[in-house]
Length: 139
Image (cartoon, rainbow, N blue to C red; front, side, top):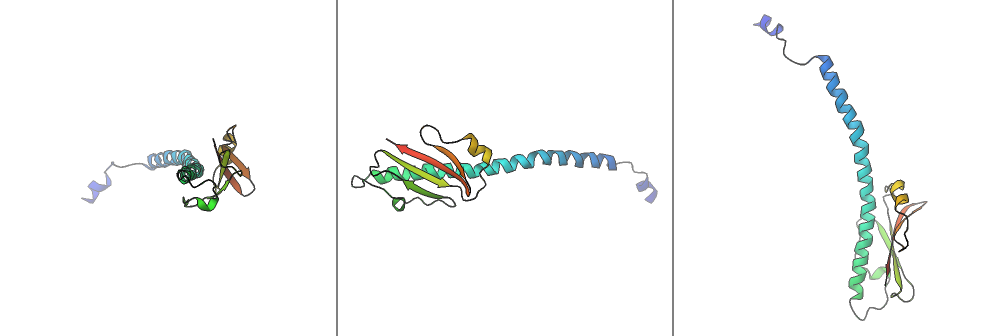
């Protein structure tokens, strides 16, 4: 019985196992950086989503006829992580600027540089403390 087990040639050789481990290592070396990049871009998307939610809340606020001016405290939307401010002229019918700060600091610089502030006033700026997304509501 013991002699029969010693002559068993089934199984994997050490070389075969090393090749499989090397292939898994190569795949991991490719996949992990891409996963990290996608995760970091999600922080950018969260800030943009927060700005859109604040804009929707402002639209709801001005749906009431007696509301003619707005401040940051008037917005009921409360983001989970990011902070926001609302800046507007004396007449909110002209334009309202919403700025959302990426508190995590993980929004990639190449993403913010590729999406800088456009002619409408929407886009990213990079400051010493991190990245800020700006959205302008204009009439």
